[in-house]
Image 1 (spheres, rainbow, N blue to C red):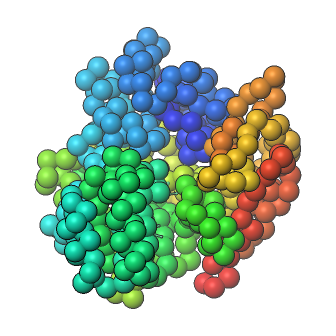
Image 2 (cartoon, protein in one colour):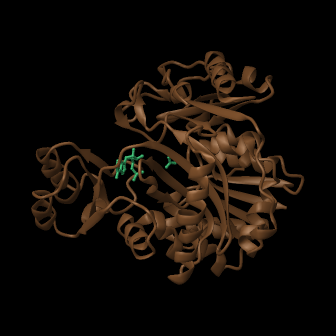
Length: 423
Ligand code: AMP
Ligand code: GLY
């Protein structure tokens, strides 16, 4: 089979690696890819939003399966463009990717189908939002409606902060057009857990759980990022929580989308908060998490080509999805200054050392070739994932790998997986 992956981050590197393990994958391409992905795939210089060029490339090369890694093209309708050209593609259509693309849509869906989530109100008008806040209980959470690179969420402790937040989102449009509409949400407390799942329109097969670390600094300080590290499984995601989610959240979400005439095929990523009143949905994403994929995929036993195809064909009920009884931890190496401003173009040393060790993975998030060397090319540069028989061992291994790799202005959190000690 010839396979095309669309995307260029650590998540797509993990997908490329996992696809490369399949005996069915004869040739893998990635658009646009990066210097790490190039080890498994031929990278082609086409942007993820250039749908016409992607479709033309897939036709020209006779691609049998295209896998979309990123949210922007999904929400923009890349799957519809591929399907219209008669091409097989893994991911939700535009009318289903809205589950991630609009917070207002997803909140309304949850309300209509009684899926547990934080109480909320939606506003198109900043004056009405401000009036509502006068009586709201603090802290309160403000969310820009559309895609905002995971940054359109403000947690406001006081009324004053909330007023400022409305201005930032709706008036100054700091998160762009995503801020024309806003959701104001009740603040929830508890542990966060990510559960990614494969969906074929009617059947859902959840993967093993994971936990992200969204803030830039140790001790969950600093700005929100795309994710600074992950571990899998989450020891806080108990069998009881899992049973609750399967019954009240996972299948009901798939059924709700089907009932709305928006059957979802692809990945649903459930961002959950384990509250005192049980698990509740924080957010939905319509694709693998980054860096959740970097700890979940190394633990997955199945041939991922079979699972992707079953999702497309509506035969996921026939797949026995299995994960290793081990653990994985990923520590992200970023450029100092991320997520605000940072320098790039520095040579990366030590990549071969990771390759020499089994059970260790270096997934590239932002790297490029320059003068025959691999250099840093982003805020998040690499994700170093390591397996272990349990979380404690996996964490020690991941931090060992952190020492093997070096580049100028290397920055990382020292406390990825610290929560494991509290389990
Ligand atoms: P989201 O993009 O919706 O997942 O929000 C980003 C982060 O903001 C989440 O991972 C949570 O840490 C936090 N957050 C979002 N919604 C809430 C909420 N209702 N209560 C508490 N924290 C929240
Ligand atoms: N790591 C969070 C995300 O992919 O949205």
